Image (cartoon, rainbow, N blue to C red; front, side):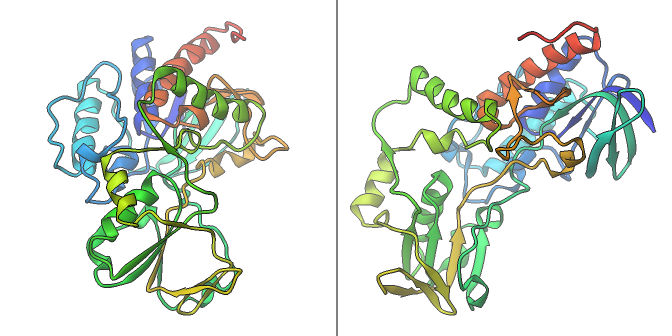
Length: 355
């Protein structure tokens, strides 16, 4: 068993930001803190994005602290561009990420320490930064008849790009950015597409300024402070009405249908009896926070979420969540990493947390 001051779980944007600021505070990688990541290589969740999501299509990617991402080719897959950038970042700042390492659970240890059980052994730590994001917990809604469908069902998490849908009839479920991106790509090659959302989509006209951004983050933050499961920041901002969206709406690709009532072996059916045949149902229905390994610490509130102030878990100030709720955006992840490092430095020095 290795004893450390801090263990960081996850080496995406939030985890690397936290590691960077921990090192700047004077802590040394592998002596004072360790960064554990289950992915096979650098890049966080970006490395698993579909090939047709080129870097030029990425919305709001912010550089990591201390090293800008410049000169990237917008036509290259975002998984390659950002993966290479994260790799260079880890090497430049000597963050020494341990990978691939699976964290099975975090539980109470001895002497007020936390015990982190992993595939490379156990870590005893004074504090924990959890930066596991959401990619590993795709949300699959349940619908009557779902198991009877004879076609293919898949989620954004394993979306392969549009080529595999050529000549097929495809139902895309989900009104977020991923759903619209998938739909517009697939419509170019499919026989027919159908867009289904639970609520009417909201399209946002004009620029999205700092005031609007702060208001959106505040809405997500309020849920987290109340102990409710977080909503994504994107869910409260609406869809940007750019040229691609406008063209798709003019062509009828984004003619939205309400949620169907049930799934049949060869398609879907609505409450009024309308039905469509489908070869594929693509669930672009988002993700949930990947925090099951923290269950032994009993951090959840009665509302189902984990109550967080800044990044500190209210029920256990040794635990900080970054990339969770209001810090799930790339710029929010950077800020959360800095906030967590500052708070943990105070904790390790025996200084009471600021409120």
